[in-house]
Length: 158
Image (tube, rainbow, N blue to C red; front, side, top):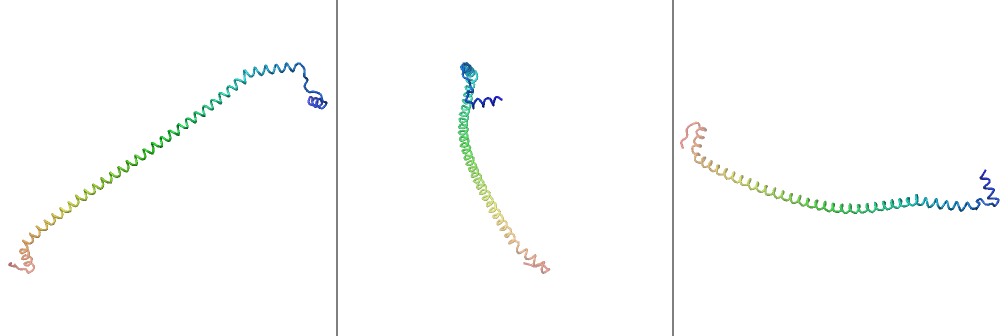
């Protein structure tokens, strides 16, 4: 019903709002309520939002500083790791070279000792062969008589 009254008032050219003395009272009440609400609600809310924004900005700056610190520490760590890997590689190569040198020396020493043993054995063998030959040469006549005696079946004089 009120909607139809409002529409009829609009169409008839009449005013919807009556301007009388209560408008000023309402305006004063509005401004009083505005200033009270501004002091009690809006101002603390704006301060809270600004503090929140500053805290967020501070946290972002701190995060950026921490990220830079982490990046610097990571770079330092990587550089140290490269140094350690390089020095350990050099140490490994040095130890490998020492091991190969030691192996070469041991093999050379064993080769020399083996050669000495073979030479000594050959010399002993040749000495024993000479002794055996000289003994056989001394006994050649006796052995020949004995073999001939056995083959012929009678005693052979020499």
